[in-house]
Length: 90
Image (cartoon, rainbow, N blue to C red; front, side):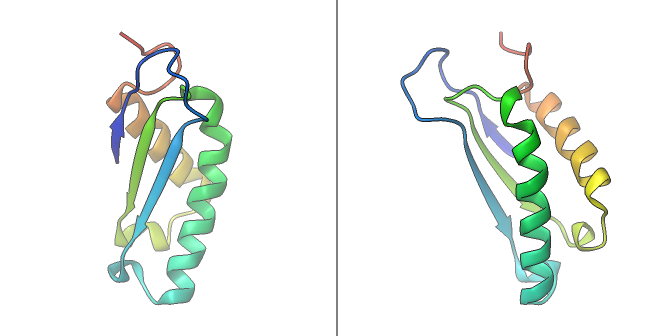
């Protein structure tokens, strides 16, 4: 995950989230399944993001077999490490 914390109070429409799911994750069907699960999990985390935040998530091959709960915990941990979670603003 790559994250960029925007300036507080910046007049931007909302947090931007990008997904990178390469062919190493699997065939087209598997890549779309991973993308859908990641989008669903990130939807639950939007309240933790500021409107100026930018996040890019790169799915690794192991994400193909991961359950949504594991993806959610991994994303929470990555956001925390990046300092993007609520209350982490410096």
